[in-house]
Amino acid sequence: MIDPFAVRLDLEQGTLAPLPERVVRRLSDLRGLVANEQLLDRELAKGDPIIYEVLKLAIPQEQGQLFINVTFLRAGRIGREYYFTKGHFHVNEKAAEVYLGLRGHGVLLLRKEANTRVVEMDRGTLIYIPPGWGHRTVNVSQETLVFLSIYPADAGHDYERVRLEGMGTRVFATVDGTGYEAVTS
Ligand code: S6P
Ligand code: ZN
Image (cartoon, rainbow, N blue to C red):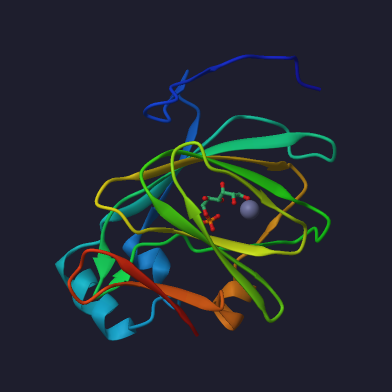
């Protein structure tokens, strides 16, 4: 049981008030996911910075409910590979998701079996992720990428599958550092 409720979403910053649960992912959480593990080790020798944070509204994890999150993915690279979220498939293959870009510039990588998609995400981009499509976000800008996600509370997250199979695409800075290239892997 949960009562109807309302919170404040700052559409410029992506912050929620009152501040809900916050999950933090660090560089070390990307082990086994990056293009170049040696470069990752070299960076980790210097420290283990936060790569992204997720604000999660407190909603019961039961069928019929919707989870609402805001992700803050920082700007940066491991070598030429832009910072990205771990990425996942929903365990419940019937669970779709909606993303809404609030700040910054990124790309959403999607994969379903051998099919891959790369979708640009800016402020105001609304993206529909159909059931069965794995997804990972990449920040290709110099500022924090912020986006809202809404998805069924019984979706579940399979990270191991992404670790084993990859997302099908990696995103690197161009040699001059001004843009990005999406490379099929
Ligand atoms: C949840 C939704 C997002 C991600 C968040 C972090 O279904 O797709 O809220 O959880 O962007 O990414 P990840 O891959 O670490 O869960
Ligand atoms: Zn998801």
